[in-house]
Image (tube, rainbow, N blue to C red; front, side, top):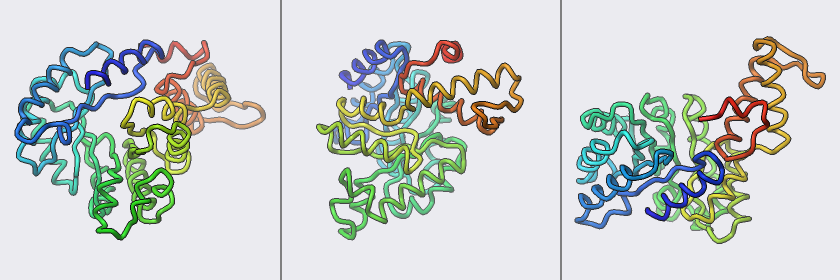
Length: 296
């Protein structure tokens, strides 16, 4: 956890913006019987991190004995320093409600929830879960999803190639992405376990972004971060076009304009503004004429 926070600080300095979140893990990170001590460690790390750090915490699932303690300790003592709480193994809207009430009781009403969908039944309820007002992002738990099928999906379905070709896995990813976009939430793509092959990571991230509509992606190793950023970033040409069109739109007070012989209006302005936002989030260099819009 300390190494992740150090890397985040170094890359924030390099890019001039925080380009990835660090999620401190309680679900798999806390030793059995040591959940309280681990939660206290998470609080210490979160409250002593730099001002530009973006830190989240994955707590235990709502049916775990340590869940209430996690929320009370972590959200209660470090809620102001966190960007969100990650809730694993969400099955129903009732799970989200329970987590939201626990956050409210810990005086963390403004802290959003990122939820992890990991079973066939929860994929079926993706649209209901995405509609919950406290949910900001839905992530897909690939490995648990595959194993929940009792061998009906071969192990290749968890690999970098199989997870993009197996019909059941692909359907689940599309359901989550569609649910998020339907309700204005952020779809976050699952992990790729091949962390020593940047070409594989880059290809998977590009497919998640360009083919499946995901706008965030998990990494499980420092070597995966830069390939993900590269794959999710718009090209220099896209950034240049977006800069020219949005700048012209501002000069026209957002009225329709002609650019390179094509009509551009508020619908396309929104799209090109999102290109610039994506460029900023991924640490790309923005043209001087639009840099001021993204200065913190």
